[in-house]
Length: 189
Image (cartoon, rainbow, N blue to C red; front, side):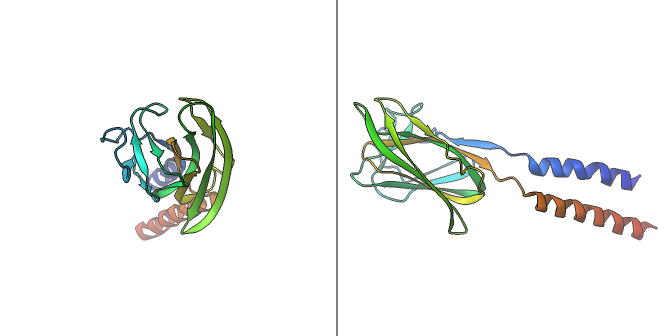
């Protein structure tokens, strides 16, 4: 009976370990006023930190409002941390006013080592955002760096996926559970 319970529990444990969950950082947790300095926020277990200065809360522009905006003449850089995850997409808004262009860049790091770097040229119209979903989204990372190279440009809706264990890790879990079951069976006998 105990062996059958263990054998029934193994697939359930393995299925639970493989379920991925997505989280979207929407900046809804921002509590300041429009134009207040942005330093950091935590959403869905992920910490978003301004690396460069001149990041501000944007409560008048977003996809939907709020977002964060780079009010600098130089590149704006933020980083996202919070365990292992992979990148889904990022929304960029380039400038306020007439059609504007900028470059959005994402870099994923694992243990401080770059796993991917992807850039895109973006053209947005007043009040619109472009979603950048690079093909590098499957890499497991523990830090995401997002840059935008234009002043008066916004970042919103950072979609992250919780890391899914590799098949080798799941195989080790299964072997370990089977070994524990066999050892328990020998101890009972």
